[in-house]
Length: 100
Image (cartoon, rainbow, N blue to C red):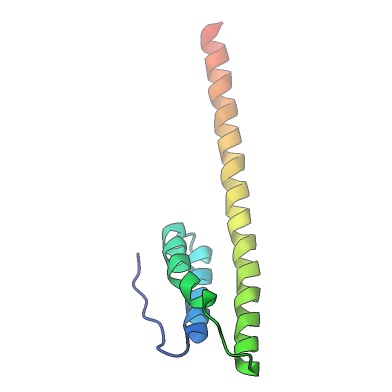
C-alpha cells in the first residue's frame, strides 16, 4: 500500500484529498488501499462542517467523486461475478464429464 500524506486544512478539505486518492486507487484496482482510505475518510466526513460556499463546493466534489467510485467498483464487481460464473460453469462441466 502506498502511504499518502494529506493536507492539514479543514477536515472537509482533507476528506476531499482522500477522495481523490481513493479514485486513483480505484482506477488502479487497488481495492485494499481504497478500503483503507475510506476508513480514514469516514470520520472526517461525519463531522459537522461550516455552511459556507467553500464547504458546499467541496461536498459537491466529494459526492461527484463518490458517484464515479461507485461506478468503478460496480464495474469491477460485475467483472468478477462474470469471471466467477465462467469458472463455476467450467467446474460443473468438468465434474459432469468425470461422472460419465
